[in-house]
Length: 416
Ligand code: PMP
Image (tube, rainbow, N blue to C red; front, side, top):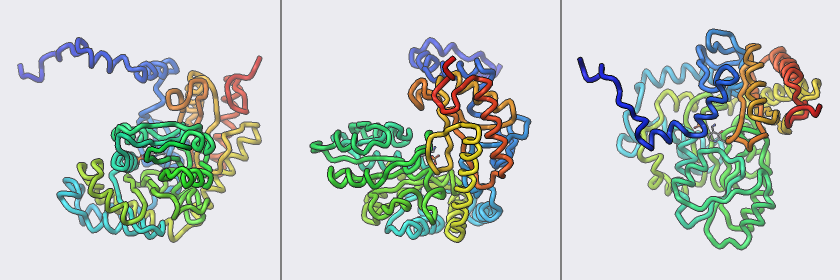
């Protein structure tokens, strides 16, 4: 008998392991099982596009962030292939010790030119970019003011810095003003250009005004804004004319750019200071050649073809129009995330399940990602969706809302 053949020891005797198993999120996964299956970690069997193979079926996919369709663009794919052939599959270490590939520098140069700023710094993921920025900017005695709907990567970065976090009401600059007025601590305000769950936009100019009067540095996370907002696709900072005013802009390559990675865009002086003290940058492996080359190729396509952003917006409008014809009112926005408030967690999961049964993939958003009773059915539009697909999901939503007796205006069951 080899050591591997022996029965594993009973690890649940350890209080740490028992607590892991008793975590409320594990209980929530059990709720998922009540609807017949967990709506997360779905097995995907083909490249992500409007039609994607999942768990043995052909699925109409409204749950992907491949907003511009660039993850499947042949030019992007061949850029990744060529980079792998030339530079190898991996970088085998951090940029600090193993060095910058010329490709990393090329992408940083392209990004700073795209934004018309003097500095850019690339990370292995968008999560790492936010984690790095928060943890190196902030110290223990500083204040981080964040929107109530802020993404986990920002919250985790603030926790890593052990800074004091204060939340302000979602998209409420006046709440920020009231909280920050008279606060003498150094601090930052973090907002998302387009919110990842509700899909709505931040009133960036108003936040900038408050930041100026309270001396907070402004950070805008454009994870969902890049490639979906602004004439040239820079994001909501472009629409609101604050590309130069935002102190830091963070982005990800995993959505519109169809790759993997993230970046901070800012002035050169700040970026060079961050480069030498950002631990989630210094002590982790650099982006793979394939992911950098793919992001670079997508960025060049976006620069050469800004009409892609307009085409995406037209598709989003088609979905909103089709839902409106059924009286369904998503949260107002012109971004690619179209979310409808369903209500209770269980109803939200049921709505997801009924759509899945019809071969349609969406994302259910339930507590703790949103407050209890405010569950969302989240649909993500791709430029490559066809009109017929948009009509199909809108018709299916109407049927499901009727079956579950959900109010078309969102927020729970129809009063009986
Ligand atoms: N910020 C926001 C607002 C996001 O939605 C995401 C991804 N869901 C990230 C940051 C992290 O990006 P990535 O997936 O590249 O790690």
